[in-house]
Image 1: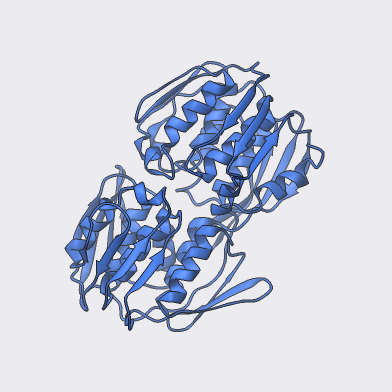
Image 2: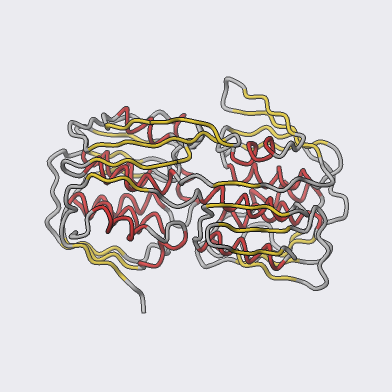
Length: 439
């Protein structure tokens, strides 16, 4: 039986300080990179979401030793070689990051390994990954969708690769495969998240990065025989924080301090966009930790929000946060335009379509194409009708967007697939309850 959440009234005012769970992108990358070291890697504040648990299960199946203590996780990996006795099936669940990046690690597998995923992940395009991996020398039974079987080779060859979609997953997959190749892999990549590059740099993996003034970065990665272990305290996830940032902005007489959040420049598009729209946000106590930029984020209720013709240069830096940014546009004065967002439809669900559906159900006029959305804001909008959200492919961000919409615009909402939040943010509702227990 599907679980659901009912919300019948707006959230009460709040003034709180919170911590959100560890960054999902960093958590999955830590797990996978720890597999490649033969020594003990340690993580604190590892996100224990379904995506990360699936990553841990995958590395254990490949031979890693995983232990948990009160506040930390330890992994002793297998090193750079993969020597398994029998064919394996690895389940990536709902995670595109896991499903794609692990294929780069499997470039030198000695036996067939099958990657499977849930219904949503199995619909997503993997050809953007298999094409460059075939250049390294890998073989696949299918080139586009899960399930995929990969057969690697002992000595993958280095390649030249151009990534044009702004996908950090594609870039990172090639970088991980490059670690196991002979020679130097050269990557021309449209600017996107750089967590993998920063981890490589911290681990002193031979990588060079030339950032240009145009939309591409140029990266060189040399193959290595071994890497050092990674001890890491994972900062809070800005994508998870985004729901509470927008909740605060749209709530009455409220303010919130979010502690120790990852504000990597490739991830703070939401902050830049919302500031342009008149939101009251400040980054406090900015510091650096192992290459990543960390800060506290202070946000207050914000009136007089204004529409935006969103600069496309922020798209890749806010790709996971656009659903809640659209809620700000719904409350803003004027017409907001967001373009070149076809990548949103490559996520767990066609998110642009779902954004349009939810806004329509709220009474917010919008015009949507396969790559853009125009939102006609209404600063005085109050929802007074019944709304049911269902059949959204269990997309965790659609679920959480709907919750924030219900708590800030009003109406009586029934939001299905409550457990979908476990994909990225298991404590989402627990933190909401701390903000306003009587809501």
